[in-house]
Length: 337
Ligand code: CP
Image (cartoon, rainbow, N blue to C red; front, side, top):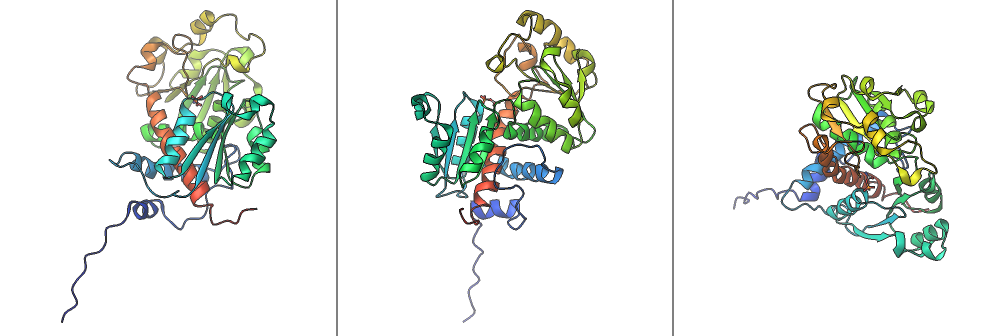
């Protein structure tokens, strides 16, 4: 009797994802993601390529794959967050991980527990990754030395915000293609911004020209050593720009007032529709949020046709899915300790 032909089994969503990402490529990242400083073009582009596949998952009717089933992701947020915290949690859930949120007024730091003790206690519960936001620069590096699982920096003081930098790069590439030679202007409180640092490292690695602008009290010559061009006036910074990224004044990180008034700041550094006219005709306007409408950006620009601010938020989920996949799923073969 002839053998009956069997139709091949359709791939599961997990198999499709592994195939699309390329199951056998070498690990892209180290054990932790503490910043974009020092990452190569290939590493950054590799993460963005994985994020593109993850965005496909987020656009399916059922936005879930079993990649991180049985894994636990702890989100330890010692500073306020709307976008990053919810985005990491959604990303982990879309990969089927269990998530818990710790921090703020609900944690035992309010009773005097140190960051080290918090870390050791969380480590004792054997999480598979800890996502950390903290007001102190270097807090994530400190934690990464104390725990055995991957640590992902979700913003530490004025140091770095690598997942924000990656989602910004992803959004720029999605809209503009290659970033090689593009003019990217970043305007605002540069001194206290972790977003500008992560963007500067990432943009320079991908070949973009970075122009930074802010009041003299909120800018540092330090940025020039990483290849940025500094401007004291907004007009030359944004003239002919492909991308304009606006940053808010980080009052929570300023000991004393660094600008005479918000009204004066808006006059000299705010992005109005007239100023957008100085940039390229197809410029994209970005902001990491939270925005102070009417200060660094006018509502007409924030909600206008050039704005990709909400695309940044959408893409944040895909980028954070990619990071969890690369650090937790692909790193899980390594022995603890
Ligand atoms: N961009 C950003 O970090 O926003 P949140 O502070 O709301 O997380």
